[in-house]
Image (tube, rainbow, N blue to C red):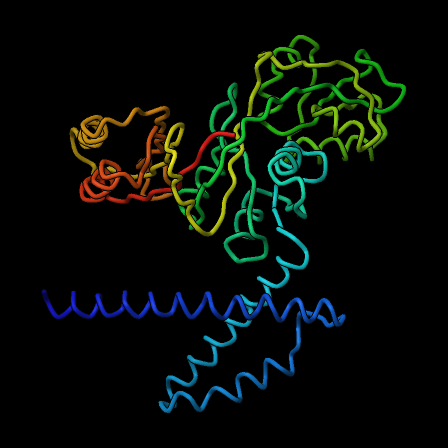
Amino acid sequence: MSELDQLRLEIRQTDKEMAAIFEKRMAIVSEILKYKVANGLPVLDAEQEARVIAGNIDNIPDKVLQEYYVLFLKDVMDISKSYQHRLMDGMKVAYSGVPGAFGQIAAARIFPDAELIPYPDFEGAYKACEKGEVDVTVLPVENSFSGEVGKVSDLIFEGSLYINMMLELNVTQNLLGVKGASTGDVKTVVSHPQALSQCSSFIHRHGLSEVEYENTAMAAKFVAEQGDRTMAAIGSVETAQLYGLEMLEANISQSRTNTTRFATFSRVMNAPSKNTAGELFILMFTVKNEAGALAKVLNIIGAHGFNMNNLRSRPMKEPLWNHYFYAELEGNASSEDGKDLIRQLSTVCDKFKLVGTYKRI
């Protein structure tokens, strides 16, 4: 064993000891919260936090390390407060859009008792979880008619969150107008680009102009605020009810089996279950710019006996004309075959990440 390997072994042992101490500290934090709730005290106690720092800083004799130890303590206390808020208020779940958006419907379906927090776009909802503002983020990853949601794919590839669950939500798109309007009055439809794409035959058949909006619910809200009979939104029944719109035409999308897959994202990867039936895992990777590079990856996957449900590519922002790949495989990533697969792919791919493991719900 080299000196570096020995040092890394010592780091792993130290991390293991720290994990046990962390669990012990958080158990105490939970008991403190019970006391605060019982006594009507707020989670934040700035004076106590200052006392904790002042009382512990001398435990580190090195003056330079003291500066970093203060930062460490502040991070630990921030994590403790976040944990207490979660215990007090329940789980916080981010989604993109406004109430009534399909993202909100999916989030409520998965986490019916959680506090649902809207963000204006996919990136805001994703980064909210990365930064610890919320516990989980729910975002669409693919539609059965329109394909992948490219912006979310980019966030998955570039970000640090893991996919731990998938929900397939049946999506029914409807034409929604202001009260008193009819389909014949409508000249312009407003909605998310994918919803417009899903309903393109209806739109073209009626000669309607299109206006893109960030999501279907925000589009419905905009139409309701305009109060213009010549303008309609495309969205869900729930959205119509929420913003006081009327359903002018039901189920106007081309496909009668329109389904969107929503993924739940969190900062920690899901632990594979003991019952591995129906389990899947997701890989994202880039390959070397040489002949047969992708074929080599696919051969390794096939040699390990994993069935691939999905494989798609998407252009990278840089370097220009390069692509990354998204693959969903059936099986357990923590099995011996799974571990060996990941080891081998890590050596032949330029960039490789295990995005998550999940079971369909």
